[in-house]
Image (tube, rainbow, N blue to C red):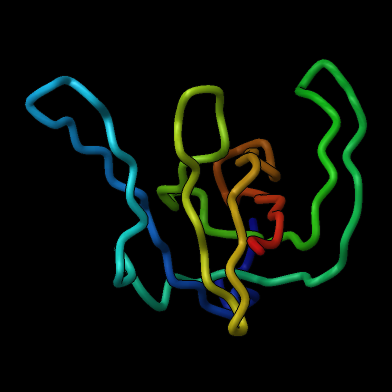
Length: 115
């Protein structure tokens, strides 16, 4: 079991919103304020690479965070805007979300710094 006391850091979540105008054109906008704040995590600011496997594709990342198993994060997927998180004054795009412990205890989230 993953000890919740290990979540010594926090992140603010920015979830993009989609609106459709009267002509049917979709517009995606970043919110001006955080969708939720002070969410618990364990932040690891080291870059790395995850190789191809049966679980997914190659991913180059700038940092990783571990979050509780019930954290609501939307990763980068085709045709969908990913969540953005703010940690230590840096904005990161959520690349993927994996059940890291295998039992829903916590999730591993690779991040790419947003420039």
